Image 1 (cartoon, rainbow, N blue to C red):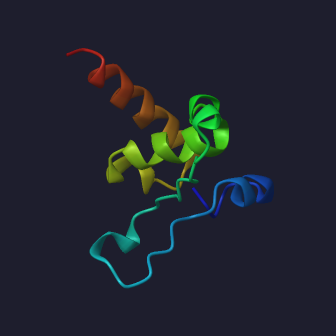
Image 2: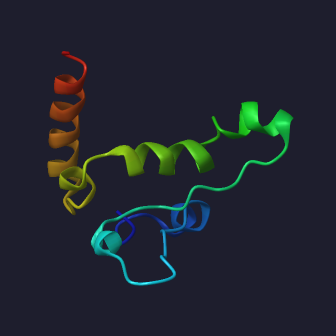
Length: 86
């Protein structure tokens, strides 16, 4: 995702950079921004800057590593459909 995303999205949602080498380092994950103020916790957690990385990081790696937007959309629809069946 980070290689095909527009520059403005890459600035809003930076990729996760682990401080040391991890097995999960090859996965495309994004940083979750900290929301500190109590009042901001209610609205800040719903903001795109916070919600987008949280949703992306919750996807299985089989989806988040797909590089083709067309393939990603097809498999995401299938994933969402199957996850709502149970």
